[in-house]
Image 1 (cartoon, helix red, strand yellow):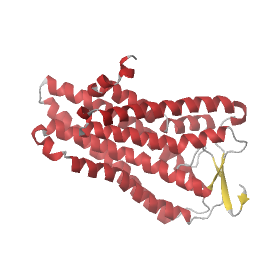
Image 2 (image 1 turned 90 degrees about the horizontal axis):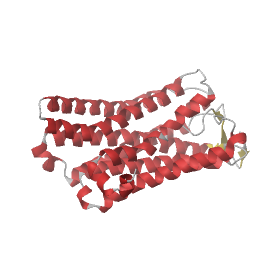
Image 3 (image 1 turned 90 degrees about the vertical axis):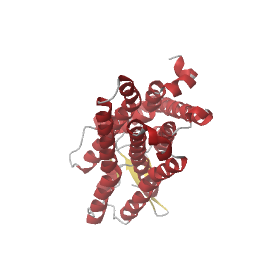
Image 4 (image 1 turned 30 degrees about the vertical axis):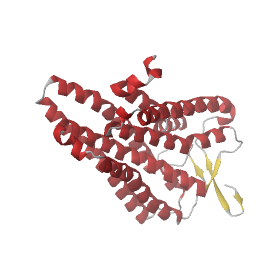
Length: 304
């Protein structure tokens, strides 16, 4: 910890032999970041450009991929700077901002996945009512709530955290996540209770809603024709793949932050990085290849 003009600095202690492999880490992470930006932006641009893709399902996909761009930009630039720095540090204020953006955007992903599941539910289970239910206005409201609800709830959480006294100044991670709670001298009951409320509201409830909608879809498909089942599989399978992967990773993040046991450093870094690598990197491939309308517009994917 260093103090300069009353600024408190936090040290990232989760890096593995960063001084030995700094340039290798930098090149690999830079390549991954460029791929994430380019691939996600390509799909978003295709959906924006082609009017036949201006449907709720594709708009939600574009929002999900745009969310991945913001999510990655919150983490990768700071990582790249740290790899080339002698000290891997961050001011406490900047750490709180990174923490806030990380979980706001992470939980927005669950809301967007829930919105996509609702869209599929209406499309498959109530096809005749789809145009009147999934109107432009309703889609806009759903998108706004997907970002605003987590943003507002985490503002309160970060405000509560800001008032906590620090007794440690080293995080055993490579960016600011739930491990920030281990810096505090005393665990606050208010922070713990509100944190549980937030997790239930922005993670558990959306996941339960998604499971409910896909259960309903499966029941309908079971009694429907093969064509309906193929349509459901084509559009729902990518969503479920993304959901299960992301829920597993975010659960690991929450659990490890609460456990007192120290994980092996390399294993912890690998698992942590998966949160900011897997979905941002593979979502464009999953949706670009699985969604026929996007695939036919994407000349780059056509050559893969």
